[in-house]
Image (cartoon, rainbow, N blue to C red; front, side):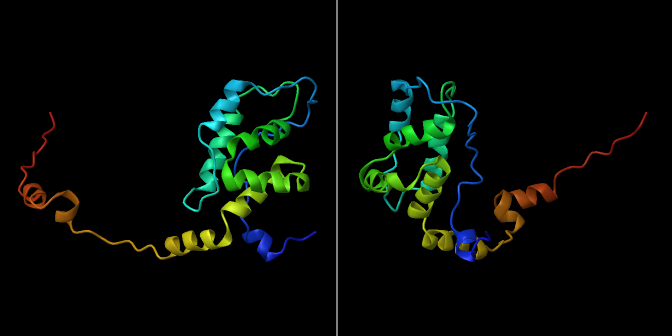
Length: 160
């Protein structure tokens, strides 16, 4: 099935390494309180001033520090993700929990929700509006450095 243009423009987690491991079963795995505390230390609340992408990267960095013996990383991410959220973001998670069964689906929906197209367009506009402003030598090194460099003694090297 071909993707639509809108799907190509939507934020995606495809460039964030998640190290999913689907070769293991889920028997007997439990989340350790230390890991939960690390995730809870920097929660995402869903405020417009928060960077959803940076928060997601931090979540993945912390959650990928454990050995996933006994389960898959997909299962760990899904089980740990609610501890990473507060406020509106946690409400969003629980209201959509039944719609997603994989970490990939959840993380893409999370980025679409909290890094919306308007934010993407604003960042794209800033990047495309960037201008390279050349500075004068006196601005780069300080006002007096131009004269100092022009009058600096040069040493002639002689061989042998």
